[in-house]
Length: 455
Image (cartoon, rainbow, N blue to C red; front, side, top):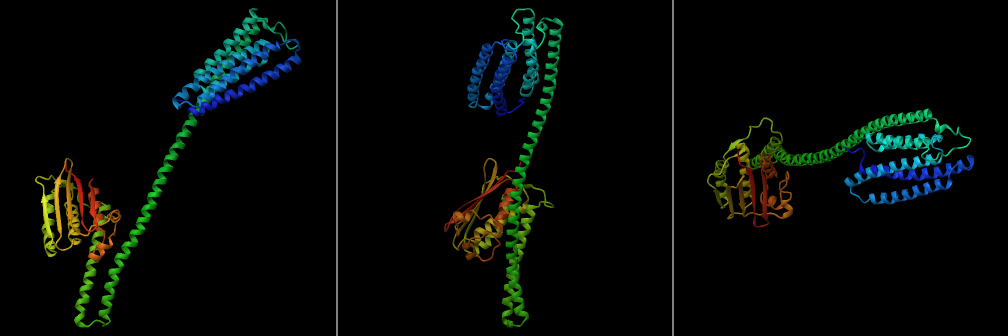
C-alpha cells in the first residue's frame, strides 16, 4: 500500500533537492568560518571541490526531477521512491566525506546523521529508515576506524580538542555505540510517528472523500426533492383547477333553478348538464384514485399470471358498440398461444380500456381502429393503431404527462381528464415493461407496449 500519493512523493523529492542547496551553502559558510577559527587546519580546496561536486550532482537531480513531471502516476510513484533513496544515500556519503575533512571524530556535527534518518522515516517505509541508520553508522564507523588505524590521515582541529582523541579506542567505541543507538532509536520513533500520522491522514482523506460522496448524494436528493415539490405544487394547481370548474358550473346551474330563473320546461336540460359535469368529476376522481393506487401499492392484490388476450377480448366487446356508433372499422387481431404476464387483471383491463377508448374517441367517423396482440422472445406486445387526429413531435414529448391534452383533442372531445395515458404508462412501467408511440398529425397514432412474459 502506498504511503503517499505520487504527487505528494514528488513534492518530497523536490524538497530534498531544495534543502541540499541550503546544506551546500551552510557547509561553505562553516568551512569559511572554520578556516578563520582553525587557520591552516582545514583542506579548503578539497572541501570546495566536494561542495562543487555535490552542486553538480544536485543540478543533475534537478533535471531528473523535471523529467519526473511527465511520468504517469504509477510510474511516477516508483521513480520517486528510487529517486528519494538515491538522494538520501548520496547525502550520507557526501556528509561523511565532509566530516572526514573537517576533523572526523573531533567534529561534533556527526549528530547531523539524525536528520537523514528522520527524513527517510518521514518519506519512506520503516525498513528504509533502519537501513539508512545502518548506512550512516557503517560509513561513520569506517571513517573513524580508518583514522584510528591510520589507514587514512586524520585532520586535527588545533585548539579545539585533544589531538589524541581519535586514537583513544574506548572513546571511539563509546562514540560509535552512542551514535548507533541514537540513530536506531530515532529511526524507530520517527518511523512510528510517521506511520501514525500517515494512517491518520489516510483516515481523514477517506472521511473527506466519504463526505464529498455524501454531499453529492445529498445534492442530488435535494435537487430531486425540489423537482418533486415543484411537480407536487403543479399537480395540486392542476387538480384544483380541474375540480373547481365543474363544481362551479354545477353550483351555478343549481342556483339558477333555486332562484327561479329557469322555467320548468328548461329545468330538465339544466339538470342534465349538471349531471354531465358531475360525471366528469367522478371520472377525474376515479383517475386520481388510480394514480394514487399506482404510487402506493399497499392494499393492492399481488401480481399473478394474467391472460392478456382474454382481458383484451372482454374490453373489445365493450368497446365495439362505441366504435359502431361512430361508424368505425374496429378489428382485434390476437396471435395464437400468447403467454400470460405477471400483473393484476384490473391493471391490464385499465390499460386496454384507456388505449382503445382514446383511439375510438379521437378518430373521425369512418376511420379505422386496429388492436393487435403478439409476442417476441421475452415480451408480450400490444398495439392500438388508429387513423385519428394524430399529433406533432412536440406534442408527443408531453403526451404522458398528467392533465396534458392537445388543443386538437380538446376541440374534438371536450370531456377528458388528461390522466389516462399517464396511468397507462405507470401501469406498464410498474411491471417492468415499456410503452412507446408513433404518430403523425392528421394521419393517426400507434401506441405499442411490451410487458415481460410470466415466468
